[in-house]
Image (cartoon, rainbow, N blue to C red; front, side, top):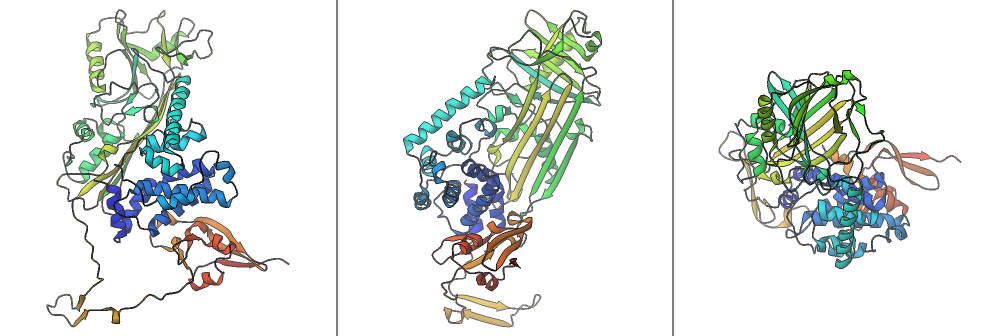
Length: 592
């Protein structure tokens, strides 16, 4: 099912909340896309608002893709802005001037299944000429044909841009040390021991071509992807999932369609009982459709008993695995103060197989466990191995005077959106669907300790999935009755057969003005505080009381639209038209 198309259809049939959902989904992505063209954050925000206003005012035919349309309109708005600002020469180095063609092609788009890949940090490393091409291909997963029409490039040039962009992306990241690590695998498990119950978060080093350089697993028991090096799990999504179970009164959340992520989350044993109540937060709100928005956060700041030595400035340099770059390390060697040894407890050590694990102690009482292994298993299986091998280990567990340890500095900053869950309906829930599931993580490990912050957001909506939309158009013969609430018979009846008694729209040639900041309960058109001058003539200057010039729109009879500011400056309207439509403004006399 194309949920975007359904939401847009619902909006066209009077459901304003449906467009709110689409707006929230695409706003930041459209801003990013436009910013890559205009290089101005404020203008990107304004042009994003104009893009959505255009979409609201110009109906898209049902057979075309909402996503493709909105990117075409966004590109057109950005190009038009640059033209007005006399900067077309600069942008033409990257894009062909195709604003007119874009407007013609808006309704000639092939639909495509909605997917979303989050590679934003990696794409930021690319040259400007490749950035939007790779963004549309890898994040929005549009076809070459669609990207070609959006960028105004030939199909072959589009393929070249994407191909070269991907090659540059790979080279840049490999140069920064994200190369393949063939055999060596380090698993870092941050363990919180509370009342004998284990909480774990697992992180692996960076590698190119994964979402924000990591692949996040939805649950501790999830099978790791053997095709990638970086796999991470943190319990914030588990918290949100279980909170939703509680809110809808179910032991587990079963979906009508079989989705592996949902199965993993249902099998998860992790819960808020395994955390100190001061380290996490769960917020629950009701959505406009009476669904649930659940936000969870987890924060940990851990300090080792003693600070390890930082080896980054030593004469000796070390790589990691088969990587070519030198990596920052910390730890203990023969020159380290002996008191630092108390940071470490040996869990087990097997020199022959290069298989060992240590526990790093912190002032807060949490434990960080490092496990060196070449095995390929799930995190749950890794942790069970640690416990089994530790229980059977009979060697000395103290870190001795001649022992050494070397640990790489680790830093992960990533985000993922679980698109497999998007639009999936929950069984026996009266049409409750999962609308959005995202999770982010910030993690660092250094000689002083370990910092972890993560949040997850899960949104569900009642959208009537599976029900045919109802179109109640009284545009032909109909009958009106009026009656008291608790009385059987009406006291008024009217049959309308033709338009003789219906009010007609006055046909006028003058433009119309609409102030979107005056729309009831419309946060998406909320103006910033502060006066904003939008026009001046020989005697007066005209201001809005807030910064809302992008939201006061003029609509012309030929279907075109613009801001009031542009229309006044170009002589398309007079200031009197604002008075006619009750648009509030401040008039200041110029100093003579």
